Image (spheres, chains in turn red, blue):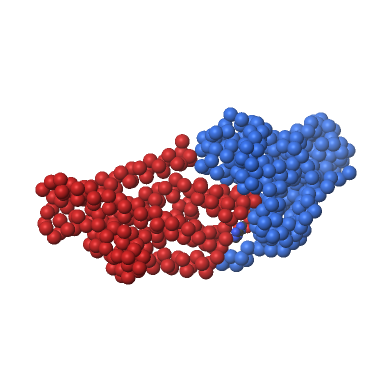
Length: 220
Length: 341
Ligand SMILES: Nc1ncnc2c1ncn2[C@@H]1O[C@H](COP(=O)(O)OP(=O)(O)O)[C@@H](O)[C@H]1O
Ligand SMILES: [Mg+2]
């Protein structure tokens, strides 16, 4: 069963999975990172409290996070088509992945930034730092290890979503598992894809942990 | 001739609005801090010390009143001007508040980087300051690799980086052991003397005030109870709040003396009298024993300071004679109330 054609299919699947996962993670951070920062900055004890903004974003983030991923993916097909010109394939799947993951990323970023000791921000204020400098040079810079740790969680979670995307027309390992395991009862192929997914998650988690501990100067 | 005023606080008030009602953290605060002073602000926990020091650099916006710094009313400044002003007011904290992901050197460069100073110049300045605080060999260390005292030295160097006129210290030694506390205090004194930087010290420990301050204000439940030179406050405290801080051990009298209805007397050594054994002299002269309830004498700047609390004999005549004897030695003697029973 593992002929060269099958192996090529699996290699392609790995490529598509990585493409979707990393692409979606990138765009999720493009949206989620600023959202997380705004949530922290605008909160009641933030550096520029602005409750209306905080409350609106908070509700949006919660709403988006409570929609099941597959429902979201199907629901926004028209939007996906508008952006990518198609509703199937790996590129198209990045759109719902980003929409589902960005609010999640925003929460991860928010909780990383909230871990930061308020005293350090106060010290920066006492030196005459502007809010922009505080966000950039204190909050984000000091939270780097925690943010990297969050990114590891985000990327592995998005990988899981992308495999689910196999049900609704995405490519990648998820689609292979679905097509061969579910439709053709070739459980061995399904098992191989699952093992490959597990390995990818392990590698991502492992390198994420390495990066995090390398970046952290607090425990030496 | 009196030195120029650098910080003047006028009718300052601060009220926090909380869910459980208003908290009046500061009321009717008036203070003058002069150039070159090491000015102590002492009070019990919750008295409003941190709020007061945070009002001085406007980390906290006063509800009313003015803060005049170097001739300018800074309570009315725009954000941008306020940030610029803060560069002339360094601040150090109990928890050091260093950037944990940056080295000692990078921490010291940080306020300069914020101010847009050229990187090379900032590094040169950091080197100079590391030398001043005695940490030249730890430039590349991260805060997690430094002891508490070393962290505070880095924090002091960081506060000094932009050449401030004033350094505000909020409980800067409260997280340190006594030996390290002393070394940090003498560093602050050095900086004050060498660089002429005015130092404002917030503390709850009289020891700190006694060691390095020349002036002190006592803050008690949100208002200034007393202020003046350290000697004045230390040896002639006018208010109950001041006495509690200066003689906290006084409380123990209730526990250890056989304190009956008899009055107790506090003999104050205020540096004017020689350190002769007055009590022994008094006992010999009046030929009656006294009960020493408490004694704490200190040597400050080579002069004898401190207090002894005694219980005089019940015989009014003898007691009278003893008081006369003590006063003839130029000692301040005052009756202590509230300790009996
Ligand atoms: N942000 C705040 N909101 C509400 N109350 C506060 C706030 N900051 C301080 N307080 C209150 O103000 C009083 C003085 O606090 P603080 O200045 O920290 O005292 P100290 O530094 O002398 O211990 C306390 O009763 C404290 O609970
Ligand atoms: Mg305090």
